[in-house]
Amino acid sequence: MNNTIEHLYKHYKTLRDFIVATWHEEHHLPLSNSEWICLNAVKEGANSIPEIMKRNEISKQAAHKMVKNLVDKNLLQLTLMTNSKVRYEISMTSTGLDIYEKNLQVQQLLEQQIEQTLGIDDYEKLQSILKKKWI
Image 1 (cartoon, one colour):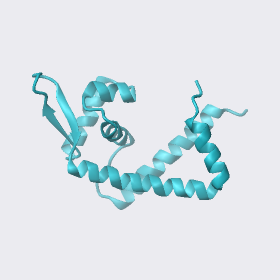
Image 2: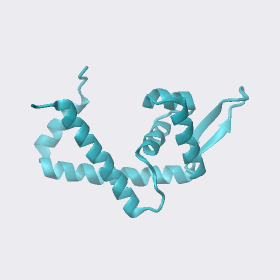
Image 3: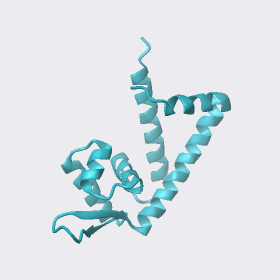
């Protein structure tokens, strides 16, 4: 049976595992796939726990745990919002930005490998298909 969803999931999992493994080989700061997703959300503009929850469709507890771990690793910082006694603004530290940029280089290397494996025509077709709205 040709199960497209399963194929997509397997490829996604393989890609994420490759990126995390490559990162761990080259750097001494272990980060989980979830932490990378959280960092990406902050880089793309999420600056609060509710925004991270919404972008990643995760629970409040999971978002708090990831943010706490990333703050402990000095990749994110929390700043109390001036108009609130309980809400914090989340932003990347300079170390967090550096780590994020280094990870982008790992992803670019992987994309180059995929392009070489598939060939330029199939790679461009894949990019086009993935950009389309499916549902």
